Image (cartoon, rainbow, N blue to C red; front, side, top):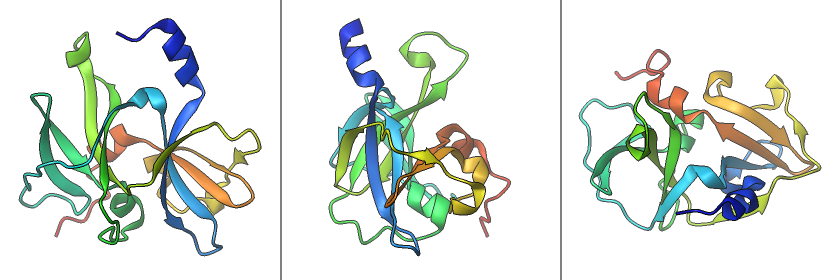
Length: 169
C-alpha cells in the first residue's frame, strides 16, 4: 500500500513519452501523472480485434483483466509507430467507473517508445494556443510548451469512447 508521503512525492512528477518532432523541430511529448501509471511492461501478448480502429492494437490480459491496447501517436497524428525499437507498454488509469475500489478503476495499455522518463513539471512552460497544438482538441486535456518542447496531456477516456471521428472503413 502506498503511503501518503509517497503520494505527495509523486504529486509533482510526470511521466514523459517522447513521440517525435513537429514541423518546427520542437520535441513532442505525451504526459501522464506518475499516479496514473500502474505498470510498465516490456511485452504484451496482443489479441487483435476485427474491424477495430487503426489505433486500437488489440487487447491484452493484465492481472486477470482484459485491457485495450492503444497507440496514441497513431490516434492523434495518424503516423505509424513501427519505427519504435522495443516499445514499452504503460498500464494507465483512465478514470473511474460506478463501482468502488480497484475494480472501479478504468485502465488501458498505451504503446510507447522505450525511452520513457520521469520529470518534474516544467516551471517555464506556458499554455499552447489552439493553433500551436497539432492534435484534435477534444483528444487533449491540456497542452503546454517551452522554447523547444511541446507537452500534451491526452484525454484517454475520450479517446476510448470517441467513435464519431474515426473512419473504420
